[in-house]
Each structure stands twice: as structure tokens, then as C-alpha cells.
Image (tube, rainbow, N blue to C red; front, side):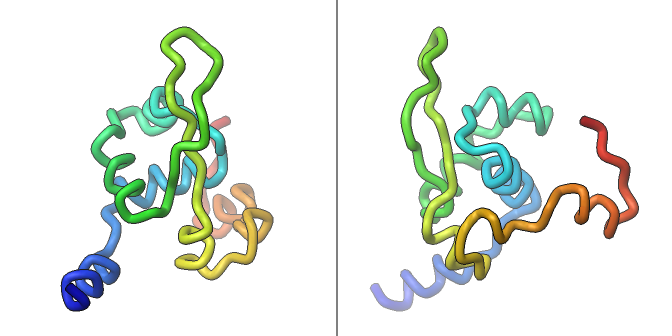
Length: 105
């Protein structure tokens, strides 16, 4: 059991999972349809993986038709990425500048 747990915790996240995690981190609380609109692809499988790895959690339901789940990051997310709280996340503008990208929103 210990070996299985250790193997699961050292698995890397896919590019899709990292993109989805970034959207959740910067826009939380956020729904799956909102994430899909931002990323342009269905994210249901990726959200399941992130929940399974305890990086995001369901924090409620949005008060709109259909009452979709709202997702937010967890304490495990902060620990895994070496953050004390969400204010430690790099600013989107700084990251775009460092990568030589223009913001489109």
C-alpha cells in the first residue's frame, strides 16, 4: 500500500491538467462550463483527475440554471506548489511579460 501511495503522489500532471489547475487557481470559485469556455475544450476528465489528486475540490454550486459545481484549489495545492496562500500566486501580467506574450482579455 505504501508503494502504491508513493507512486501515485509522484505522478506528473499533464499539460491539460496544469492549464485547468491554473484556470481554477486564478478564477476560483469557477464552474466546469466556465473553465471549458476559457480553455476551449471539455475538462470533465481533467477535473476528475485534479479532484482525485486533492488539488481542487467542490466548494458549492453556482446559483444559475442547472446549478453546476463550483471548484476551488485545496490546501494540498498550496503545499505542493510551495505557496502559503493564493496571494503568493504570480501575477498573470508578470507571467505574460516573462513569456513574451500579450494578454487577450
